[in-house]
Length: 114
Image (cartoon, one colour):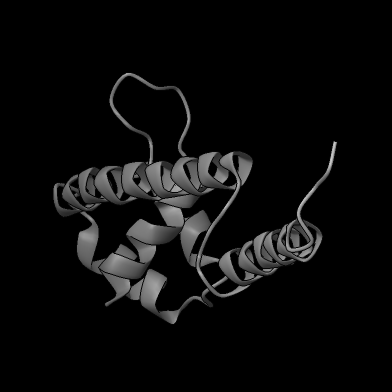
């Protein structure tokens, strides 16, 4: 079978163009693999849940009769210990659960201290 003279350079050009397109797309174009997309979606959903639950935590804090003293303690504590204070106060324990969530407690402490 006779192949045209232009076919070999054309195939090389197409292969090089496809490789360049893939490199540019994944590095600058924002393309991601399926696994990366699943990881990003899981991270975003966890962040959304923490944000929603921290609002419940803030509401539980507002119902605490010793709120003023505890808020002063949270504001004076270091940022590393604020979440622990919220956990100790029981505000990060959601209705129907036995123990609090540390991520919710940290986010709640940031909202209360603000």
